[in-house]
Length: 591
Image (cartoon, rainbow, N blue to C red):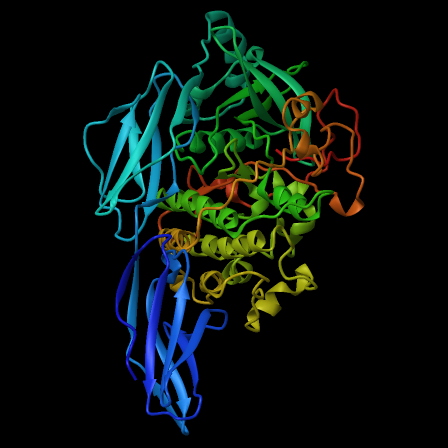
């Protein structure tokens, strides 16, 4: 049997592999294999060359990176199995971006990062950055490539180029604006704000950390409620800038019936630990403020977060699947969501932060449909059905928690990887609840018996294998977030770019905003935030998000360090709602 030859084909072109079987007079069965697996749905043709000579060929149209591999023929003739030698198909082309620079709004003269990543065959060897259309001095050889910018005082643009031996690929151009101008605190504001801070009894070191992100209450104009639960509420707000402009933000406001300065310090310490996060896939704290109250009562802490009109990822996925106008979600889009989360978690793991509650409900979608890892403990109260109380402990998201965490209450970077595997399963199923039919109280025994989440429909074997590796019983045998990110990028590179649909779901927009260019989104299930519910009862989503992390040494269980004490599981709160607000049914909307 003659064998297929080695070939190198440009990305997007067609390829054909051939083999010839001789000495067989009866029509033989000839199959094609790739990397040891028989190709079931391939463009295969057979032709008679002579009375005992047969030609078999396989045609691959518009090849992509996933077609790279070894191909050979296998024939069953005259009672014997015959294998040809292997022919290797290599697909080459320009680099393909898996992450491009994103538009940003940054504080004036504040350091920030721009990131791009690319894959390809041949592998990209060099990255160059442009700022304002001009090349930045230096070159980068690692992907992802990170450009650290020391700050800007006027709007500018950024882009990057990826080079390999086949040529150059240019990324999108990102616009960076100094929209979040550093608030100017006058002496009058200082007098008004200094007193409540001093009454909290928080440590001097914490005061110092909060100094550069503390915003006077007078610079905030609170608006409609985006979400409410037992923790308090999340409101839309306008942050007034020193130049007279304003910026839309989201404000987390805790319960007013807080009678302990320790509770307030816990939240403020959480924000202080988050203020230095600088990654496009990790949501960043804009600032903190204190809402004053009469009768010498302690002020109410408020945490300012970016406003996310697309809402949280879980609600977005569910609405795309079950909304009034269900939307197709290409596998490339789902993989991009997973990659964004992996990048955010890789960044946090490098800073020795343990998330402890990674799930799609705790991931937000930004303006450009990029995913930002988040969670300030908000979802614990709003997604009450996902949390289960074990003994005297607080409620735990048991269907996302690693086996060792359920058994011994031990949380490490490895347990976050387990949760990421469940999060990938959520994305693949577009927001379905993990372990359908299994009660929360039964999860531990179910996992202990070796059961795991089943492979979702339309989920590729390679992707499910990646999920399964996250659920290894031995924590240290699970992949790292860096490894997961690289594997997912390689999977994405094997697909052609997803088509642009132009249709997005907007979860946090007002009616007048929807009317100005977003009308198609309302047909998919967006609704007014306050007092209005969706028509379909099965679409009642209790959704919100923020962040909650812990900082510990690598591979270590959590200890009571300065930044990890707010990861202790909180008990349910039965405090009244924010004072001045009328108690009403829980709003079904996301931040």
